[in-house]
Image (cartoon, rainbow, N blue to C red; front, side, top):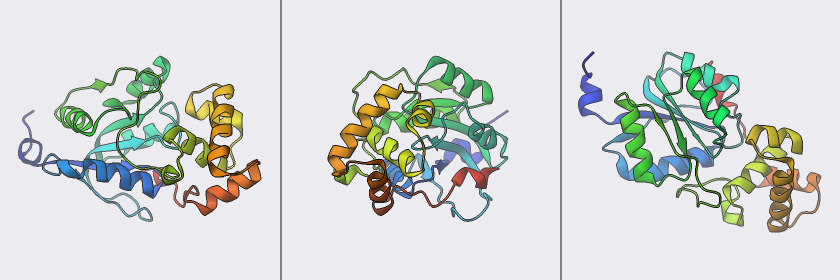
Length: 222
């Protein structure tokens, strides 16, 4: 099958899927210099998906990883030609499950913007790309997330977002593919930066500082 006019000549149409507006804005801002290659399609979070896109980029910030049914919903939706997971979690069985479900790519959040764009364009043209497992401590790509202005790194912010959602440490560990001891470490470091000392205070702080996701965006893709 030959390439369509859009595939051959136009930028790749990209939908960003995450519940947190600041995350979506951050990724869109990071990709903005590459508008000749990627067009980020803004979709109203309150309406069913009705715009056709070349790639739905599923950002796992404070959302289910790729072993849950969110990926199934995206793959099944006719408005997305391909689905790509954008994540920190690189457990081999998690990657394998995502690809078995029909994802066309599994990309690391440590990728510099130009490498992320290169990968997305290559996936659009039919390649299947899985990033190498990123080394521990590797810095995040230059985008935004809730709590960044308060000194929280992205993993700490993700833990606080899940706490604000009412998740227990065990649930957070399962969702983030980390040990409970790692989650406790992130909780302690986050609390110090936030100036709180209890889970109740953390939830209130989270709600006040943009950690309460107003939309469950994946429902629009079902």
